[in-house]
Length: 611
Image 1 (cartoon, rainbow, N blue to C red):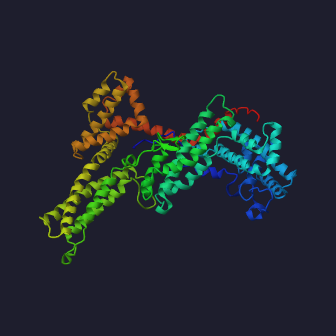
Image 2: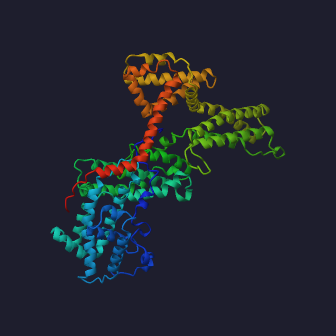
Image 3: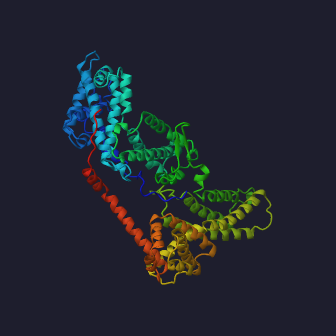
Protein backbone atom coordinates (compact mmCIF):
# COMPACT_ATOMS: atom_id res chain seq x y z
CA UNK A 1 0.00 0.00 0.00
CA UNK A 2 3.01 2.29 0.40
CA UNK A 3 3.24 4.10 -2.90
CA UNK A 4 5.07 7.28 -3.88
CA UNK A 5 2.69 10.04 -5.07
CA UNK A 6 2.74 10.60 -8.82
CA UNK A 7 4.24 14.07 -9.29
CA UNK A 8 2.37 14.44 -12.59
CA UNK A 9 -1.06 13.80 -11.09
CA UNK A 10 -3.69 16.49 -10.83
CA UNK A 11 -3.42 18.39 -7.55
CA UNK A 12 -6.87 17.67 -6.11
CA UNK A 13 -6.09 19.33 -2.79
CA UNK A 14 -5.55 22.86 -4.10
CA UNK A 15 -7.28 25.10 -6.63
CA UNK A 16 -10.74 23.88 -5.66
CA UNK A 17 -11.97 27.45 -5.11
CA UNK A 18 -11.04 28.61 -8.62
CA UNK A 19 -14.26 27.24 -10.10
CA UNK A 20 -16.31 29.55 -7.88
CA UNK A 21 -13.90 32.48 -8.46
CA UNK A 22 -14.45 32.38 -12.22
CA UNK A 23 -18.20 31.72 -12.01
CA UNK A 24 -20.85 33.88 -13.68
CA UNK A 25 -23.43 32.19 -11.42
CA UNK A 26 -21.91 32.33 -7.92
CA UNK A 27 -24.03 34.61 -5.69
CA UNK A 28 -25.77 35.95 -8.80
CA UNK A 29 -22.48 36.65 -10.53
CA UNK A 30 -22.04 39.75 -12.69
CA UNK A 31 -25.55 39.52 -14.14
CA UNK A 32 -27.75 40.03 -11.10
CA UNK A 33 -27.51 43.16 -9.03
CA UNK A 34 -29.42 46.31 -8.24
CA UNK A 35 -33.10 45.58 -8.50
CA UNK A 36 -32.39 41.85 -9.02
CA UNK A 37 -30.20 41.34 -5.96
CA UNK A 38 -33.16 39.79 -4.12
CA UNK A 39 -35.04 36.86 -5.70
CA UNK A 40 -38.25 38.26 -4.18
CA UNK A 41 -38.03 41.01 -6.78
CA UNK A 42 -39.02 38.54 -9.54
CA UNK A 43 -42.67 38.49 -10.52
CA UNK A 44 -44.30 35.15 -11.27
CA UNK A 45 -44.09 34.42 -14.99
CA UNK A 46 -46.55 32.37 -17.01
CA UNK A 47 -43.80 30.68 -18.98
CA UNK A 48 -42.55 28.57 -16.11
CA UNK A 49 -38.93 29.77 -16.39
CA UNK A 50 -36.70 29.25 -13.33
CA UNK A 51 -35.86 32.90 -12.78
CA UNK A 52 -35.11 32.51 -9.08
CA UNK A 53 -32.33 30.03 -9.93
CA UNK A 54 -29.89 30.37 -12.84
CA UNK A 55 -32.16 30.38 -15.91
CA UNK A 56 -31.82 34.15 -16.28
CA UNK A 57 -28.00 34.05 -16.21
CA UNK A 58 -27.82 31.03 -18.54
CA UNK A 59 -30.11 32.53 -21.19
CA UNK A 60 -28.30 35.88 -20.87
CA UNK A 61 -24.98 34.15 -21.57
CA UNK A 62 -26.37 32.49 -24.70
CA UNK A 63 -28.03 35.72 -25.83
CA UNK A 64 -24.72 37.61 -25.58
CA UNK A 65 -22.94 34.76 -27.37
CA UNK A 66 -25.53 34.91 -30.16
CA UNK A 67 -24.91 38.66 -30.60
CA UNK A 68 -21.34 37.99 -31.75
CA UNK A 69 -20.16 41.11 -29.91
CA UNK A 70 -18.11 39.40 -27.20
CA UNK A 71 -15.11 37.12 -27.03
CA UNK A 72 -15.18 33.96 -24.93
CA UNK A 73 -13.26 35.65 -22.13
CA UNK A 74 -15.36 38.82 -22.19
CA UNK A 75 -18.47 36.69 -21.97
CA UNK A 76 -17.36 34.24 -19.27
CA UNK A 77 -15.00 36.31 -17.09
CA UNK A 78 -17.16 37.58 -14.20
CA UNK A 79 -14.97 40.71 -13.94
CA UNK A 80 -15.49 41.86 -17.53
CA UNK A 81 -18.36 43.73 -19.27
CA UNK A 82 -20.52 43.82 -16.15
CA UNK A 83 -22.78 46.72 -17.33
CA UNK A 84 -23.59 44.88 -20.58
CA UNK A 85 -24.29 41.67 -18.68
CA UNK A 86 -26.68 43.38 -16.30
CA UNK A 87 -28.42 45.09 -19.18
CA UNK A 88 -28.91 41.77 -20.98
CA UNK A 89 -30.08 40.09 -17.78
CA UNK A 90 -32.69 42.82 -17.27
CA UNK A 91 -33.93 42.29 -20.82
CA UNK A 92 -34.15 38.52 -20.39
CA UNK A 93 -36.00 38.73 -17.06
CA UNK A 94 -38.38 41.42 -18.33
CA UNK A 95 -39.20 39.31 -21.37
CA UNK A 96 -39.80 36.23 -19.21
CA UNK A 97 -42.10 38.18 -16.91
CA UNK A 98 -44.17 39.33 -19.89
CA UNK A 99 -44.69 35.87 -21.40
CA UNK A 100 -48.42 35.39 -21.97
CA UNK A 101 -48.41 31.72 -22.87
CA UNK A 102 -50.43 32.46 -26.04
CA UNK A 103 -49.52 30.98 -29.41
CA UNK A 104 -47.33 33.38 -31.37
CA UNK A 105 -46.28 35.28 -28.25
CA UNK A 106 -43.31 37.47 -29.36
CA UNK A 107 -41.74 37.17 -25.91
CA UNK A 108 -41.62 33.39 -26.20
CA UNK A 109 -40.22 33.67 -29.72
CA UNK A 110 -37.46 36.00 -28.56
CA UNK A 111 -36.41 33.68 -25.71
CA UNK A 112 -36.42 30.69 -28.07
CA UNK A 113 -34.19 32.60 -30.50
CA UNK A 114 -31.66 33.41 -27.78
CA UNK A 115 -31.53 29.80 -26.63
CA UNK A 116 -31.28 28.32 -30.13
CA UNK A 117 -28.91 30.83 -31.73
CA UNK A 118 -26.93 31.22 -28.52
CA UNK A 119 -26.51 27.47 -28.31
CA UNK A 120 -24.91 27.34 -31.75
CA UNK A 121 -22.64 30.30 -30.94
CA UNK A 122 -21.63 28.74 -27.61
CA UNK A 123 -20.74 25.47 -29.34
CA UNK A 124 -18.46 27.36 -31.71
CA UNK A 125 -16.80 29.15 -28.79
CA UNK A 126 -16.22 25.92 -26.91
CA UNK A 127 -14.80 24.30 -30.02
CA UNK A 128 -12.25 27.12 -30.29
CA UNK A 129 -11.28 26.97 -26.61
CA UNK A 130 -11.36 23.31 -25.57
CA UNK A 131 -8.30 22.26 -27.57
CA UNK A 132 -6.16 24.97 -25.97
CA UNK A 133 -6.33 23.48 -22.48
CA UNK A 134 -3.72 21.05 -21.14
CA UNK A 135 -5.97 18.66 -19.23
CA UNK A 136 -2.92 16.79 -17.87
CA UNK A 137 -1.59 19.88 -16.08
CA UNK A 138 -1.32 19.13 -12.33
CA UNK A 139 -2.78 22.61 -11.71
CA UNK A 140 -5.69 22.17 -14.12
CA UNK A 141 -8.30 22.88 -11.43
CA UNK A 142 -7.11 26.49 -11.15
CA UNK A 143 -6.82 27.01 -14.92
CA UNK A 144 -9.09 29.95 -15.78
CA UNK A 145 -9.97 28.79 -19.31
CA UNK A 146 -10.81 25.32 -18.00
CA UNK A 147 -13.10 26.77 -15.30
CA UNK A 148 -14.89 29.08 -17.72
CA UNK A 149 -15.53 26.15 -20.09
CA UNK A 150 -17.27 24.35 -17.22
CA UNK A 151 -19.53 27.34 -16.64
CA UNK A 152 -20.41 27.71 -20.32
CA UNK A 153 -21.24 24.01 -20.33
CA UNK A 154 -23.50 24.59 -17.31
CA UNK A 155 -25.25 27.46 -19.12
CA UNK A 156 -25.91 25.18 -22.09
CA UNK A 157 -27.33 22.45 -19.87
CA UNK A 158 -29.51 24.97 -18.02
CA UNK A 159 -30.90 26.25 -21.30
CA UNK A 160 -31.48 22.68 -22.53
CA UNK A 161 -33.85 22.37 -19.56
CA UNK A 162 -35.45 25.81 -20.00
CA UNK A 163 -36.15 25.10 -23.70
CA UNK A 164 -39.04 22.90 -22.58
CA UNK A 165 -40.98 26.10 -21.78
CA UNK A 166 -40.90 27.30 -25.41
CA UNK A 167 -41.06 24.00 -27.28
CA UNK A 168 -43.08 25.07 -30.32
CA UNK A 169 -40.91 28.11 -30.97
CA UNK A 170 -37.66 26.10 -30.57
CA UNK A 171 -38.82 23.35 -32.93
CA UNK A 172 -39.87 25.94 -35.51
CA UNK A 173 -36.37 27.44 -35.49
CA UNK A 174 -34.60 24.06 -35.55
CA UNK A 175 -36.64 22.76 -38.51
CA UNK A 176 -35.17 25.49 -40.70
CA UNK A 177 -31.74 23.89 -40.23
CA UNK A 178 -32.85 20.25 -39.99
CA UNK A 179 -36.23 19.12 -41.40
CA UNK A 180 -35.87 15.83 -39.46
CA UNK A 181 -36.62 17.67 -36.22
CA UNK A 182 -40.36 17.10 -36.36
CA UNK A 183 -41.07 17.56 -32.64
CA UNK A 184 -39.48 18.65 -29.37
CA UNK A 185 -38.29 15.14 -28.47
CA UNK A 186 -36.28 15.01 -31.70
CA UNK A 187 -34.81 18.42 -30.87
CA UNK A 188 -33.74 17.26 -27.41
CA UNK A 189 -32.11 14.19 -28.91
CA UNK A 190 -30.23 16.30 -31.47
CA UNK A 191 -29.00 18.66 -28.75
CA UNK A 192 -27.93 15.77 -26.51
CA UNK A 193 -25.96 14.21 -29.36
CA UNK A 194 -23.71 17.26 -29.66
CA UNK A 195 -23.51 18.29 -26.00
CA UNK A 196 -19.83 19.03 -25.09
CA UNK A 197 -18.28 16.44 -22.72
CA UNK A 198 -17.88 18.66 -19.65
CA UNK A 199 -21.02 17.86 -17.69
CA UNK A 200 -20.17 16.35 -14.30
CA UNK A 201 -16.72 17.88 -13.91
CA UNK A 202 -17.85 20.97 -12.02
CA UNK A 203 -20.14 18.87 -9.83
CA UNK A 204 -17.27 16.62 -8.71
CA UNK A 205 -14.87 19.52 -8.14
CA UNK A 206 -17.50 21.20 -5.98
CA UNK A 207 -18.03 18.02 -3.94
CA UNK A 208 -14.29 17.76 -3.35
CA UNK A 209 -14.22 21.38 -2.21
CA UNK A 210 -17.05 20.74 0.27
CA UNK A 211 -16.05 17.32 1.65
CA UNK A 212 -12.24 17.27 1.54
CA UNK A 213 -11.58 19.72 4.43
CA UNK A 214 -13.88 17.83 6.82
CA UNK A 215 -12.71 14.30 6.06
CA UNK A 216 -8.98 15.09 5.81
CA UNK A 217 -9.10 16.85 9.20
CA UNK A 218 -10.84 13.92 10.92
CA UNK A 219 -13.66 16.23 11.93
CA UNK A 220 -16.51 14.23 10.37
CA UNK A 221 -18.68 12.93 13.17
CA UNK A 222 -20.32 9.51 13.13
CA UNK A 223 -23.72 11.13 12.58
CA UNK A 224 -22.38 12.79 9.43
CA UNK A 225 -21.40 9.37 8.05
CA UNK A 226 -17.65 9.20 7.57
CA UNK A 227 -17.88 6.37 5.04
CA UNK A 228 -20.29 8.39 2.88
CA UNK A 229 -18.17 11.54 2.81
CA UNK A 230 -15.01 9.53 2.18
CA UNK A 231 -16.72 7.70 -0.71
CA UNK A 232 -17.67 11.08 -2.23
CA UNK A 233 -14.01 12.14 -2.20
CA UNK A 234 -12.80 8.82 -3.60
CA UNK A 235 -15.55 8.73 -6.22
CA UNK A 236 -14.87 12.30 -7.34
CA UNK A 237 -11.14 11.65 -7.71
CA UNK A 238 -11.81 8.40 -9.60
CA UNK A 239 -14.25 10.11 -11.94
CA UNK A 240 -12.08 13.17 -12.57
CA UNK A 241 -8.98 11.04 -13.17
CA UNK A 242 -10.70 9.20 -15.99
CA UNK A 243 -12.56 12.19 -17.39
CA UNK A 244 -9.47 14.42 -17.59
CA UNK A 245 -7.46 11.62 -19.19
CA UNK A 246 -10.15 11.26 -21.84
CA UNK A 247 -10.24 15.02 -22.50
CA UNK A 248 -6.45 15.16 -22.85
CA UNK A 249 -6.51 12.28 -25.34
CA UNK A 250 -9.06 14.14 -27.48
CA UNK A 251 -7.27 17.51 -27.20
CA UNK A 252 -3.98 15.86 -28.24
CA UNK A 253 -5.33 14.53 -31.54
CA UNK A 254 -4.16 16.13 -34.76
CA UNK A 255 -6.35 17.64 -35.97
CA UNK A 256 -8.46 18.16 -32.87
CA UNK A 257 -11.99 16.84 -33.52
CA UNK A 258 -15.02 19.08 -33.25
CA UNK A 259 -15.84 19.08 -29.53
CA UNK A 260 -19.44 18.22 -30.32
CA UNK A 261 -18.24 14.79 -31.42
CA UNK A 262 -15.72 13.99 -28.66
CA UNK A 263 -18.23 11.57 -27.13
CA UNK A 264 -20.86 9.36 -28.70
CA UNK A 265 -24.36 9.18 -27.27
CA UNK A 266 -23.55 5.77 -25.76
CA UNK A 267 -20.37 7.12 -24.14
CA UNK A 268 -22.32 10.02 -22.66
CA UNK A 269 -24.88 7.66 -21.19
CA UNK A 270 -22.12 5.48 -19.70
CA UNK A 271 -20.58 8.65 -18.24
CA UNK A 272 -23.87 9.60 -16.60
CA UNK A 273 -24.31 6.10 -15.13
CA UNK A 274 -20.78 6.05 -13.71
CA UNK A 275 -21.17 9.53 -12.24
CA UNK A 276 -24.46 8.70 -10.56
CA UNK A 277 -23.39 5.35 -9.08
CA UNK A 278 -19.66 5.54 -8.34
CA UNK A 279 -19.96 7.14 -4.88
CA UNK A 280 -22.64 4.70 -3.74
CA UNK A 281 -20.66 1.68 -4.97
CA UNK A 282 -17.48 2.83 -3.22
CA UNK A 283 -19.42 3.49 0.00
CA UNK A 284 -20.51 -0.15 0.01
CA UNK A 285 -16.83 -1.12 0.12
CA UNK A 286 -15.75 1.22 2.94
CA UNK A 287 -18.50 0.77 5.52
CA UNK A 288 -15.79 -0.04 8.10
CA UNK A 289 -14.94 3.69 8.07
CA UNK A 290 -18.33 4.67 9.49
CA UNK A 291 -16.95 5.19 13.00
CA UNK A 292 -13.28 5.71 12.11
CA UNK A 293 -12.77 9.40 11.17
CA UNK A 294 -9.01 9.30 11.77
CA UNK A 295 -8.60 6.20 9.62
CA UNK A 296 -10.58 7.93 6.87
CA UNK A 297 -8.40 11.03 7.23
CA UNK A 298 -5.25 8.92 6.88
CA UNK A 299 -6.60 7.36 3.68
CA UNK A 300 -7.34 10.69 1.98
CA UNK A 301 -3.71 11.28 0.84
CA UNK A 302 -3.73 7.78 -0.67
CA UNK A 303 -6.85 8.70 -2.63
CA UNK A 304 -5.42 12.01 -3.84
CA UNK A 305 -2.13 10.36 -4.88
CA UNK A 306 -4.01 7.70 -6.86
CA UNK A 307 -2.83 4.84 -4.68
CA UNK A 308 -6.28 3.60 -3.67
CA UNK A 309 -7.89 4.17 -7.09
CA UNK A 310 -5.02 2.69 -9.10
CA UNK A 311 -6.35 -0.35 -10.93
CA UNK A 312 -9.96 0.42 -9.99
CA UNK A 313 -12.50 0.23 -12.80
CA UNK A 314 -16.22 0.81 -13.15
CA UNK A 315 -17.99 -2.02 -14.97
CA UNK A 316 -20.82 -0.48 -16.97
CA UNK A 317 -22.61 -3.81 -17.40
CA UNK A 318 -22.66 -4.92 -13.79
CA UNK A 319 -22.73 -1.32 -12.53
CA UNK A 320 -20.03 -2.25 -10.03
CA UNK A 321 -16.67 -0.89 -8.93
CA UNK A 322 -13.97 -3.51 -9.44
CA UNK A 323 -10.42 -3.63 -8.12
CA UNK A 324 -11.08 -1.65 -4.96
CA UNK A 325 -8.74 -2.91 -2.18
CA UNK A 326 -10.41 -5.04 0.46
CA UNK A 327 -10.70 -3.99 4.10
CA UNK A 328 -7.91 -6.45 4.91
CA UNK A 329 -5.65 -4.92 2.25
CA UNK A 330 -6.36 -1.39 3.46
CA UNK A 331 -5.79 -2.16 7.13
CA UNK A 332 -2.63 -4.06 6.18
CA UNK A 333 -1.08 -0.67 5.60
CA UNK A 334 -1.56 0.15 9.30
CA UNK A 335 0.62 -2.38 11.15
CA UNK A 336 0.05 -0.95 14.63
CA UNK A 337 -3.75 -1.25 14.79
CA UNK A 338 -3.54 -4.82 16.14
CA UNK A 339 -0.88 -3.80 18.67
CA UNK A 340 -3.05 -0.96 19.96
CA UNK A 341 -5.98 -3.37 20.39
CA UNK A 342 -3.79 -6.03 22.04
CA UNK A 343 -2.41 -3.60 24.62
CA UNK A 344 -5.89 -2.25 25.30
CA UNK A 345 -7.13 -5.80 25.99
CA UNK A 346 -4.16 -6.56 28.27
CA UNK A 347 -4.76 -3.34 30.21
CA UNK A 348 -8.42 -4.25 30.59
CA UNK A 349 -7.46 -7.60 32.06
CA UNK A 350 -4.85 -6.02 34.35
CA UNK A 351 -7.40 -3.47 35.60
CA UNK A 352 -9.95 -6.11 36.63
CA UNK A 353 -11.79 -4.67 39.62
CA UNK A 354 -10.97 -6.09 43.08
CA UNK A 355 -13.64 -8.17 44.76
CA UNK A 356 -11.86 -8.20 48.14
CA UNK A 357 -12.89 -4.79 49.45
CA UNK A 358 -10.24 -4.63 52.20
CA UNK A 359 -7.55 -4.59 49.46
CA UNK A 360 -9.36 -2.03 47.33
CA UNK A 361 -6.60 0.57 47.49
CA UNK A 362 -4.30 0.42 44.45
CA UNK A 363 -0.77 -0.69 45.33
CA UNK A 364 2.26 1.33 44.14
CA UNK A 365 3.48 -1.50 41.88
CA UNK A 366 0.03 -1.88 40.29
CA UNK A 367 -0.21 1.86 39.72
CA UNK A 368 3.28 1.93 38.13
CA UNK A 369 2.37 -0.77 35.58
CA UNK A 370 -0.98 0.79 34.77
CA UNK A 371 0.40 4.30 34.25
CA UNK A 372 3.45 3.27 32.22
CA UNK A 373 1.36 0.93 30.03
CA UNK A 374 -1.28 3.63 29.45
CA UNK A 375 1.44 6.09 28.50
CA UNK A 376 2.83 3.54 26.03
CA UNK A 377 -0.65 2.98 24.61
CA UNK A 378 -1.08 6.71 23.97
CA UNK A 379 2.01 6.66 21.75
CA UNK A 380 0.86 3.56 19.89
CA UNK A 381 -2.60 5.07 19.38
CA UNK A 382 -0.92 8.17 17.93
CA UNK A 383 1.13 6.01 15.61
CA UNK A 384 -1.46 3.52 14.36
CA UNK A 385 -3.05 5.71 11.66
CA UNK A 386 -0.03 7.92 11.07
CA UNK A 387 -1.99 11.16 11.58
CA UNK A 388 -2.35 13.74 14.34
CA UNK A 389 -5.16 12.78 16.73
CA UNK A 390 -6.00 16.25 17.98
CA UNK A 391 -5.06 19.92 17.86
CA UNK A 392 -4.93 22.17 14.79
CA UNK A 393 -3.14 19.44 12.81
CA UNK A 394 -5.80 16.80 13.52
CA UNK A 395 -6.07 14.35 10.63
CA UNK A 396 -2.88 15.62 8.96
CA UNK A 397 -0.11 13.06 8.33
CA UNK A 398 2.73 12.85 10.83
CA UNK A 399 6.01 14.10 9.44
CA UNK A 400 8.98 11.73 9.25
CA UNK A 401 10.53 13.48 12.23
CA UNK A 402 7.31 13.19 14.27
CA UNK A 403 6.93 9.51 13.40
CA UNK A 404 10.56 8.79 14.31
CA UNK A 405 10.11 10.61 17.65
CA UNK A 406 7.05 8.45 18.41
CA UNK A 407 8.95 5.26 17.61
CA UNK A 408 11.82 6.30 19.85
CA UNK A 409 9.37 7.18 22.62
CA UNK A 410 7.68 3.77 22.26
CA UNK A 411 11.06 2.07 22.44
CA UNK A 412 11.93 3.94 25.65
CA UNK A 413 8.52 3.49 27.27
CA UNK A 414 8.42 -0.23 26.46
CA UNK A 415 11.57 -0.73 28.53
CA UNK A 416 9.92 1.06 31.47
CA UNK A 417 6.73 -1.02 31.09
CA UNK A 418 8.75 -4.23 31.09
CA UNK A 419 10.65 -3.11 34.19
CA UNK A 420 7.43 -2.16 36.05
CA UNK A 421 5.68 -5.39 35.05
CA UNK A 422 8.68 -7.44 36.19
CA UNK A 423 8.55 -5.81 39.61
CA UNK A 424 4.80 -6.35 39.90
CA UNK A 425 5.09 -10.04 38.96
CA UNK A 426 8.00 -10.59 41.37
CA UNK A 427 5.77 -9.39 44.22
CA UNK A 428 2.76 -11.42 43.07
CA UNK A 429 4.26 -14.91 42.85
CA UNK A 430 2.10 -17.99 42.77
CA UNK A 431 -1.61 -18.36 42.16
CA UNK A 432 -3.77 -15.59 43.58
CA UNK A 433 -6.59 -16.21 45.99
CA UNK A 434 -9.29 -14.67 43.78
CA UNK A 435 -10.27 -14.90 40.12
CA UNK A 436 -9.79 -11.13 39.77
CA UNK A 437 -6.28 -11.40 41.21
CA UNK A 438 -5.35 -14.11 38.74
CA UNK A 439 -6.68 -11.98 35.88
CA UNK A 440 -4.59 -9.04 36.99
CA UNK A 441 -1.52 -11.23 37.15
CA UNK A 442 -2.20 -12.67 33.69
CA UNK A 443 -2.75 -9.12 32.39
CA UNK A 444 0.59 -8.00 33.83
CA UNK A 445 2.33 -10.88 32.08
CA UNK A 446 0.67 -9.97 28.78
CA UNK A 447 1.70 -6.34 29.22
CA UNK A 448 5.29 -7.42 29.88
CA UNK A 449 5.31 -9.70 26.80
CA UNK A 450 3.73 -6.92 24.75
CA UNK A 451 6.51 -4.47 25.70
CA UNK A 452 9.14 -6.82 24.32
CA UNK A 453 7.15 -7.62 21.16
CA UNK A 454 6.42 -3.97 20.30
CA UNK A 455 10.14 -3.17 20.37
CA UNK A 456 10.71 -5.99 17.93
CA UNK A 457 7.81 -4.75 15.79
CA UNK A 458 9.07 -1.18 15.46
CA UNK A 459 12.75 -2.12 15.14
CA UNK A 460 12.90 -2.26 11.29
CA UNK A 461 11.18 1.08 10.81
CA UNK A 462 13.19 2.76 13.57
CA UNK A 463 16.39 1.29 12.14
CA UNK A 464 15.48 2.74 8.75
CA UNK A 465 15.14 6.20 10.28
CA UNK A 466 18.45 5.84 12.10
CA UNK A 467 20.20 4.83 8.91
CA UNK A 468 18.78 7.97 7.30
CA UNK A 469 20.09 9.99 10.25
CA UNK A 470 23.53 8.45 9.75
CA UNK A 471 23.44 9.50 6.09
CA UNK A 472 22.69 13.08 7.10
CA UNK A 473 25.51 12.99 9.62
CA UNK A 474 27.95 11.67 7.03
CA UNK A 475 26.88 14.34 4.54
CA UNK A 476 27.42 17.15 7.04
CA UNK A 477 30.72 15.88 8.47
CA UNK A 478 32.14 14.72 5.11
CA UNK A 479 33.37 11.53 6.81
CA UNK A 480 36.24 9.84 4.93
CA UNK A 481 35.41 6.27 5.95
CA UNK A 482 36.49 3.92 3.18
CA UNK A 483 33.67 2.47 1.18
CA UNK A 484 32.51 -1.06 1.91
CA UNK A 485 34.46 -3.46 -0.32
CA UNK A 486 31.42 -4.79 -2.22
CA UNK A 487 30.22 -1.24 -2.82
CA UNK A 488 33.65 -0.17 -4.09
CA UNK A 489 33.79 -3.21 -6.35
CA UNK A 490 30.55 -2.17 -8.01
CA UNK A 491 31.89 1.33 -8.62
CA UNK A 492 35.11 -0.13 -10.12
CA UNK A 493 33.33 -2.31 -12.66
CA UNK A 494 33.93 -1.25 -16.26
CA UNK A 495 30.47 -2.43 -17.23
CA UNK A 496 27.57 -4.20 -15.61
CA UNK A 497 23.96 -4.74 -16.64
CA UNK A 498 21.97 -1.65 -15.47
CA UNK A 499 19.53 -3.63 -13.32
CA UNK A 500 22.33 -5.59 -11.68
CA UNK A 501 24.32 -2.42 -11.05
CA UNK A 502 21.34 -0.66 -9.54
CA UNK A 503 20.65 -3.56 -7.19
CA UNK A 504 24.26 -3.93 -5.98
CA UNK A 505 24.89 -0.19 -5.80
CA UNK A 506 21.85 0.42 -3.60
CA UNK A 507 22.42 -2.66 -1.46
CA UNK A 508 26.10 -1.83 -0.97
CA UNK A 509 25.39 1.72 0.11
CA UNK A 510 22.73 0.64 2.63
CA UNK A 511 24.99 -2.13 3.96
CA UNK A 512 27.88 0.25 4.60
CA UNK A 513 25.67 2.74 6.44
CA UNK A 514 24.04 -0.03 8.48
CA UNK A 515 27.48 -1.37 9.45
CA UNK A 516 28.43 2.03 10.83
CA UNK A 517 25.23 2.07 12.92
CA UNK A 518 25.93 -1.41 14.28
CA UNK A 519 29.57 -0.53 15.11
CA UNK A 520 28.40 2.54 16.98
CA UNK A 521 26.02 0.36 18.99
CA UNK A 522 22.91 2.19 17.83
CA UNK A 523 21.22 -1.02 16.72
CA UNK A 524 21.70 -4.77 16.53
CA UNK A 525 22.72 -6.53 13.34
CA UNK A 526 19.17 -7.91 13.00
CA UNK A 527 17.63 -4.45 13.34
CA UNK A 528 20.11 -3.02 10.84
CA UNK A 529 19.24 -5.73 8.35
CA UNK A 530 15.53 -4.96 8.64
CA UNK A 531 16.21 -1.23 8.50
CA UNK A 532 18.21 -1.69 5.31
CA UNK A 533 15.10 -3.16 3.72
CA UNK A 534 13.13 -0.02 4.54
CA UNK A 535 15.91 2.24 3.29
CA UNK A 536 16.42 0.28 0.05
CA UNK A 537 12.66 0.15 -0.63
CA UNK A 538 12.49 3.94 -0.40
CA UNK A 539 15.37 4.44 -2.82
CA UNK A 540 13.96 1.94 -5.32
CA UNK A 541 10.76 4.01 -5.59
CA UNK A 542 12.63 7.29 -6.16
CA UNK A 543 12.62 8.28 -9.85
CA UNK A 544 15.55 10.66 -9.48
CA UNK A 545 17.66 7.99 -7.78
CA UNK A 546 16.80 5.37 -10.40
CA UNK A 547 17.69 7.71 -13.26
CA UNK A 548 20.98 8.64 -11.55
CA UNK A 549 22.05 5.04 -11.00
CA UNK A 550 20.98 4.02 -14.52
CA UNK A 551 23.33 6.68 -15.89
CA UNK A 552 26.17 5.50 -13.62
CA UNK A 553 25.70 1.92 -14.83
CA UNK A 554 26.64 2.80 -18.41
CA UNK A 555 28.99 5.74 -17.84
CA UNK A 556 32.40 4.65 -16.47
CA UNK A 557 33.60 8.27 -16.27
CA UNK A 558 30.81 9.14 -13.86
CA UNK A 559 31.62 6.05 -11.80
CA UNK A 560 35.31 7.00 -11.72
CA UNK A 561 34.33 10.39 -10.28
CA UNK A 562 32.88 8.60 -7.22
CA UNK A 563 36.01 6.63 -6.35
CA UNK A 564 37.63 7.62 -3.10
CA UNK A 565 34.51 9.29 -1.75
CA UNK A 566 32.79 8.14 1.42
CA UNK A 567 29.38 6.52 1.28
CA UNK A 568 27.84 9.67 2.71
CA UNK A 569 29.55 11.84 0.10
CA UNK A 570 28.35 9.58 -2.70
CA UNK A 571 24.83 9.70 -1.32
CA UNK A 572 25.11 13.48 -1.04
CA UNK A 573 25.66 13.59 -4.82
CA UNK A 574 22.21 12.14 -5.19
CA UNK A 575 20.81 14.53 -2.56
CA UNK A 576 22.22 17.51 -4.49
CA UNK A 577 20.63 16.24 -7.69
CA UNK A 578 17.32 15.65 -5.92
CA UNK A 579 17.38 19.14 -4.38
CA UNK A 580 18.08 20.68 -7.77
CA UNK A 581 15.25 18.78 -9.44
CA UNK A 582 12.83 19.69 -6.64
CA UNK A 583 13.77 23.36 -7.04
CA UNK A 584 13.26 23.18 -10.81
CA UNK A 585 9.92 21.43 -10.30
CA UNK A 586 8.86 24.11 -7.80
CA UNK A 587 9.85 26.89 -10.18
CA UNK A 588 8.00 25.18 -13.01
CA UNK A 589 4.82 25.08 -10.91
CA UNK A 590 5.18 28.76 -10.03
CA UNK A 591 5.67 29.67 -13.70
CA UNK A 592 2.90 27.37 -14.92
CA UNK A 593 0.22 30.09 -15.33
CA UNK A 594 2.61 32.31 -17.31
CA UNK A 595 3.77 29.41 -19.44
CA UNK A 596 0.21 28.28 -20.09
CA UNK A 597 -0.78 31.79 -21.12
CA UNK A 598 2.14 31.94 -23.55
CA UNK A 599 1.23 28.56 -25.05
CA UNK A 600 -2.34 29.63 -25.49
CA UNK A 601 -1.28 32.89 -27.10
CA UNK A 602 0.88 31.10 -29.63
CA UNK A 603 -1.57 28.31 -30.32
CA UNK A 604 -3.63 28.56 -33.46
CA UNK A 605 -7.23 27.86 -32.71
CA UNK A 606 -8.79 25.29 -35.09
CA UNK A 607 -11.53 26.51 -37.38
CA UNK A 608 -14.85 25.26 -36.06
CA UNK A 609 -17.22 23.86 -38.68
CA UNK A 610 -20.74 25.19 -38.60
CA UNK A 611 -23.58 23.44 -36.85
